[in-house]
Image (cartoon, rainbow, N blue to C red; front, side):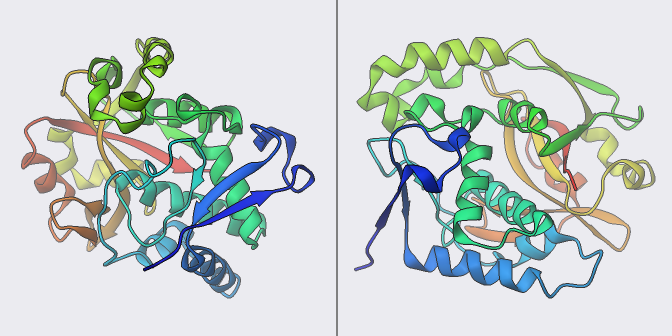
Length: 288
């Protein structure tokens, strides 16, 4: 039986912008801290110009897809799980590793600070509602912090506009462990959804994803691909990283269908056509 470690950070070890209370709790296994430190150490030896996003993302290939890995505590705390991934935690882990490597920060604590700042609104952990749940808010919050930039031009291929309308969590609270256990959170979740809704973003419709000459100018290796959808109450259906192979765009993702982290053998255009509710892709680039 594996043990879950809870690490309590003294206040003086954590920047004020990351502290949500007198102490910050982190749930992880020893293997997670070893993996993070090993990958960051390896990144120090890479040639200049290496694509860090794909370097780190490929280190997770073959790991199992597991949903809801962040929902293991009743009280909200930072969860690090590099052994089991879903599409969002793959993107967050890779982005945090990339930022640490770019900044010359190679310690476990550096990584925890970076992940906390990215995952939680204003970098502060209070309760479940302080976590960023919709990826549109994740994009806008991390754009504000200078972590990422959303690419929305040129047109074409960014010829469509998504007007965000999110309500899934407040309309389906029983689908979320924390909302089942704490119905008092639903009002705050609904307020957050109202703040996110109404924003408009340009995206590449899935019919245009077949034009690789246009895409090549707009999408770079290692960009985050956020797949837009028409499912009621949701903004983004799935996430992954852009991978160019032989002039064709593919998706590196934690795949529920394949049960693991994979580089999809099919080109992205074909992948999107297989999902009727997918409408296109938004492109988010990690800042250097």
